[in-house]
Image 1 (tube, rainbow over the protein chains, first blue to last red):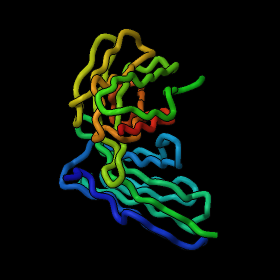
Image 2 (cartoon, rainbow over the protein chains, first blue to last red):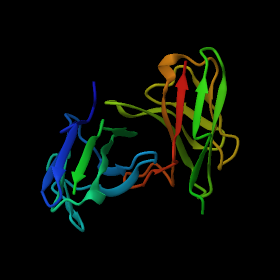
Image 3 (cartoon, one colour):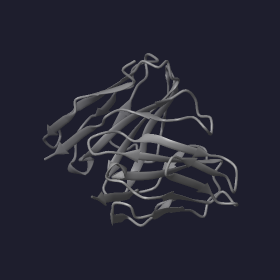
Length: 108
Length: 114
């Protein structure tokens, strides 16, 4: 059983569309991180959120931490082919726990 | 800075063989960890170390051994490989276990056990 559930598991969209990826848990996290992984490489940190209700923006990416610090979302505006990859959320309790990831494919 | 390096990139083993996956970092990070990544399972923690001479088990430690003799190196040993250990293995390091600390990952080792 995954401590962190990510949805959807796979998303294929056209360039220019918007999308949202969700990360949910029944546990409370002291922080939550989003990583992006490209084929053949290790994950790379995108953002860390710490405070309940916190919203962070990274260019076209908007990250939100739920008020109760149990869930998070990643919204991408006007997706581009360069956004293609595996998006992983990771919540910290005592250690960092990863979700299974969302595979995003953006077609041009 | 090279960051986190892992060798080999690819490896094929027969059941029962042993091998060591190498991991090194040049960022003077105290915390290092090993993960395995399987389809639909995300990254699962195998073993971790909070400093030279200190190691501990993660979520899936069975079949794997680690040691940490220096700050830089954290090898992962498979003593008797099994097909269930076919996976992609990632080594990671971070400055500490702080709640905002970034994990820096290596490029991974893709292991197939026949």
